[in-house]
Length: 302
Ligand code: NAP
Image (tube, rainbow, N blue to C red):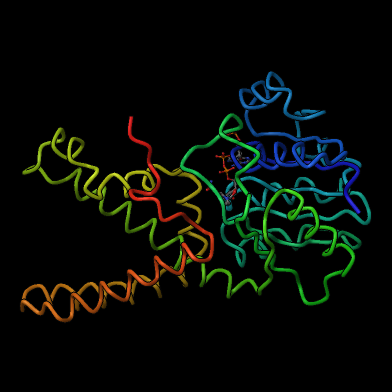
């Protein structure tokens, strides 16, 4: 059921976490991979993260029965073009990109007949990047969404589902447009709001820099963690999930104006009702095991 040889293209947070999680699960597959820069490849060799570190993506995928594309969304097309002619017949190609529609458009045309393309997205990450940032527990009890094509090979799909489950993830399936809308709500727009809030605080000259940092635990700090996420990855997310993000941002702006008006008019009832509704959503996330209800996000005081 498991794979013989798994090739990773892109060796950052997600790929390295997958390798750690595979090891923890005792998966016997041999591992190969490549990264764009000689520096990252040298780090991965030094870490002994993979069985084989290759200088090119074409070499890395040779003989692999699973290929996982772990590069930023905007880099997927060039990678697919390079590996297409070197893929083994019957191999499965998947990816971990944060946007699905654009990745399918970029990758699918470059894959030969007889290769199964099953796009995926693990909803797990941190604000850290690179191969040293990975850890085996990253996917534990997190969701991995697969967006298989309608005519997907059932056995290939079953194998990939089992692979993600062995790394600790729960697996769900949906079509790519729905994935992109859901993620615009749960991830992409919240990131944009965090980027904006941190940018506003940075611009605000009335509050000195030291005060922004000193009093950051009042809420700002949690925005800064999100706004510290990788700039390349997030640039690509907004460039490729444009429609869904713009739709959610439009709704966000309307709600923001409604709250702004309530504040101006002193409409405490509206504010209280709104905040009561949002508090219940937090409760739902905790009940679903997607966070703990430890105060202050479980931060430990020293
Ligand atoms: P990362 O730690 O920054 O690693 C990215 C890897 O891609 C690096 O090995 C990098 O090579 C390589 N790369 C970057 N630009 C490239 C290009 N133009 N051509 C070829 N290779 C390139 O990123 P990550 O967090 O693992 O994210 C990888 C993918 O997972 C992205 O598609 C992202 O959307 C998705 N994802 C991320 C998260 C998250 O929270 N981080 C969560 C779920 C999904 P060098 O090291 O040599 O530069």
